Every structure is written in C-alpha cells, then in structure tokens.
Length: 111
Length: 112
Image 1 (cartoon, each protein chain N blue to C red):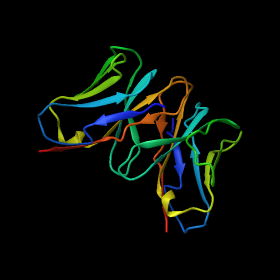
Image 2 (image 1 turned 120 degrees about the vertical axis):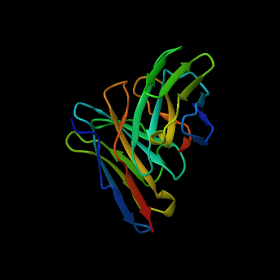
Image 3 (image 1 turned 180 degrees about the horizontal axis):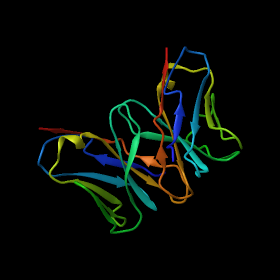
Image 4 (image 1 turned 60 degrees about the horizontal axis):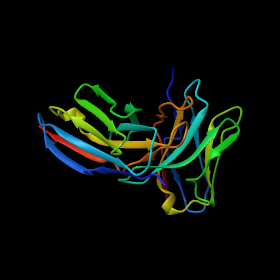
C-alpha cells in the first residue's frame, strides 16, 4: 500500500525567507504531484514530476523528485504573503490510478 | 473549456437521508475520480470510473456508498442513510488517460 508523508505539517515563516517542504512516499510511484489549496477552495495543480531528477520551477516555487530516495521537495524562495495556502503532495501508481495524498503542509507567510 | 463542475456546492442532510453529489468532467476527459477530504486532512481516494464502468472502488466504503458514470450525464456519488461521520468535502477530478487530474470545486456535505 502506497503511503505519502509530508513534513512539516504546519509552517509559519516571514516574507523574504526560503524554506522547503518534504514529501516521502513508501513504494515505487510513477509520478508525483504538488497541489495548492486555499481555504474552502479546490485544489490547484502546481507540478507533475515524472522521472528521477526532474526539476520544475514556477515563479518562487521549485519542485524536485528523487525516485531512488522516494523523496520530493517543494522549495519556496523569497516567500511572499500570497503563497500562504495548504500544499499537498500526491503520488500515483501510474496510468490512471487514483492518487494517494499526504496530509498537507499548512503554510502561513507573515509580512 | 469549462473546468470540472460539481453540484451542489453545499449540501445539508439529516441523519438517515440520502445525499447525491454530481460531477461533470472537463470536456474531452473520460476518467473521473472521487475523493473525500475530512477537516484538516488530505484527500482520500474513493473511486475511479470511466463511462459506464467502475474501474477501481478500493477506497469506497463497502456499505451505503455507490458511484456511477452513465453514458450520458454527470457522474454521481450517492450516499444512502447518511451519518454524521459522512460530513466532509467531496471532490471530483477528471483527466485524460494517465495525465494530471483536475479537481472540481467540491461539494461540502454537512450531516445534522
């Protein structure tokens, strides 16, 4: 059974700082996703990582995947308040399988 | 291209009633997934459907819950005889095969 663990679960940081969210998964997974969720809203797709060593960047967010370590990271550079949200990683078994989600990282960025 | 649509957005039911949640996938997407999110938790996979077929229902509770995706019309998640523990946000996602899943706005079910 695939299990996904994120840490930290809660993170409060100041604007301008850098930080990393970690996502570990328990068994081989073909792909790793990062989603953002604002309070009371749906999930917004941020990144899809498909292969070992994959790195994707969008603005102040950068995601990477190490399939050997079964680890993905989401790095935040020079955080701004607008990035406050809950971030989920999710792993899938490939093809069209349902996703297994981590519990999410609740990120608060203070001015 | 309209996104994934779900209705109703909010649903209140009393214990013992039935809840019907609807999901219309994005145009061109034939794969539909249902997830449940409890407060302060991640999403839990429930069921994966293609048109007229249930492909994987391994996350679906064995009793009271059912899902369908008919040839015409939206996918429906049905919960019979709701209990307070069914209160949650239910999200539908759709995808073309093997690609990113796009999520709808969710239906927030409250059982009184």
